Length: 222
View 1 (tube, rainbow, N blue to C red):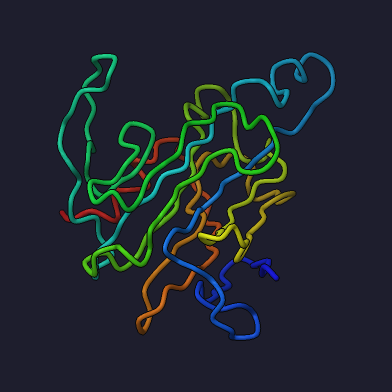
View 2: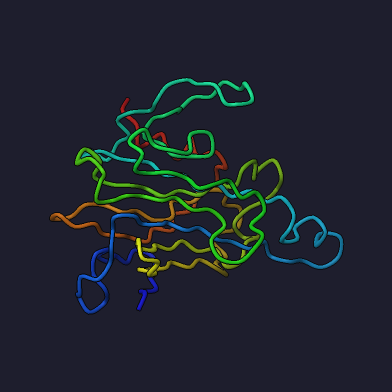
């Protein structure tokens, strides 16, 4: 049975709530989901579930110092745009696969429409190099401040971990929290090594910025 986490709670990703080693970490899916809160009148046409309300899932791969060692390089997208943080230790919508091939983002959902996971980051935990000691999972509302969008407008927001066999290991839900009003980014959860195993901690730390680069700053070397 999957464990429903509370903020700050930690579990062992290899074991169930009875301490049994039952989960296959050869491939773990970190799923993020959300629904836009429906409102009456004119606003319902703007903030309906089908409207573009773009939450982005991002992963920071951290070393033993809790820092991103490789910020990547400047590269070109398929449509000719120049971007930074390309092929480094940050996985996001402009650099969707880590250079190791062991961490990747499956796509960029721009509405939250549909049931289940809206975005997924897949991690082959057992194949990650030992230089990576922690993975931080962040979610930001793209252009949230410009569009007057924030987490207070979102229902059914969650992050969950599913093993290679499709077993849901844990789920952390965040809904109906008034402290989310005005917040456009969140450090949602982290997976980290501990005594040879991987653990998962629900964090739920909200931030006002809608730019994940601002979230990244404390995790970079000066």
